[in-house]
Image (tube, rainbow, N blue to C red; front, top):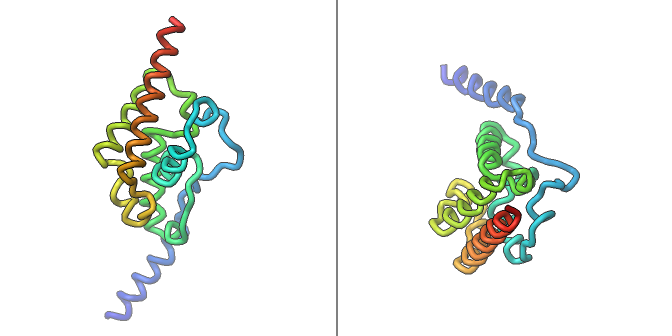
Length: 156
């Protein structure tokens, strides 16, 4: 009985490896990328790339364990949700109102410590933002928010 259960579990684990979500990878830089249209200081961009871009861009860096089901499904789900909320590679395509909302969300979530999410930082300790990185991101995000807001008002 135990041998059959173990063989069944092993068989299921092998079979689920065939169900693979698509990889979040692109070759060419996006013309709609935030960095193609706005100034992002190197220190801020570095922090964003380490802490945010895996889930909030069109290019996720996958460690080996992200290739194993069901972990790959969990990762694909979080990346999909993250990109739906904010995608740095599609930022310029957003309407102004959405850009402003996302910049406000960045400031608030970094300040409150809700981003990056704990399930991500648990496996990616380098993504834990220091107090100085948080301040840099918040200051930049607030500044860009005001810049876009002012530019929009001036255009009217």
